Amino acid sequence: YGARATSAPNNWGQSTNEFNSINLNHNWVLGGGKLNEFIFQYADFANAITANSLDPQHTFNNGVRVGQNTNTPQATQQEKYQFRDDFSFSKAGWGGVGHDFKVGVNFINEPRLYLTFTEGTGDYAYTHGDNTLGGLITAVSINGGLAEANIPLKQYAGYVQDDWRVNSRVTLNLGLRYDLITGYQIDQSKNPNFVKVQADGAGGLLKGIKGGGELGRSPR
Image 1 (cartoon, one colour):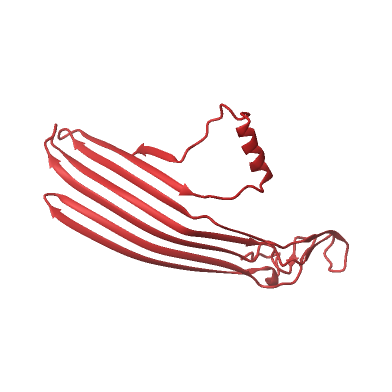
Image 2: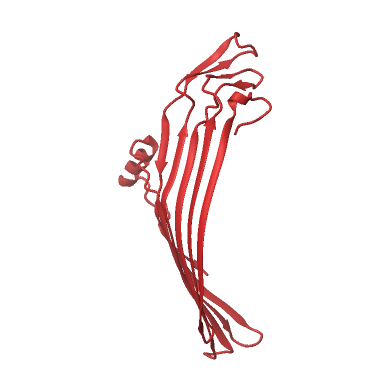
């Protein structure tokens, strides 16, 4: 991570990824042109970016950097469960040659979408005015602290679809899909911009500005 020509190896990081997935499929032919398809999936993902060094970072005038990368360590972890079922069948006639119907539902539960981002070591970082370690220093900063969040979410979807063969030359593809996502409950009570916008909204200052909701309907 962060490997480039102007960064020393102790300014790099090590990025590791692990992904696991289990899939279960069941296809059930009911007869008479009827088919049910069920899918279950469990998956988890973990990414970790660790520091190669805990030394203070030095950034020189020519762009060279040594010491711990201030974007390390950080991590991403995800856990997901998915249930999906699709049912299809055909029907002759009904106002034309026939219909091919399909209906389905999909549910995704992500109880864990965990992110961390730590800046540096809690030690000092130095910006140099020249290209020597003992030369002029133009800026000093201290990095530290831990930012982390778990953002669980749930996704719901359902659809109906009809491929209506009116005659041998005309087929109408009709359908409707509905999606709903819940989650992303992030506490922004300490975010001054968010607090100000919330107060302005409550005071009527944002009246007339259209916003999106959590419901979604779209053609299939």
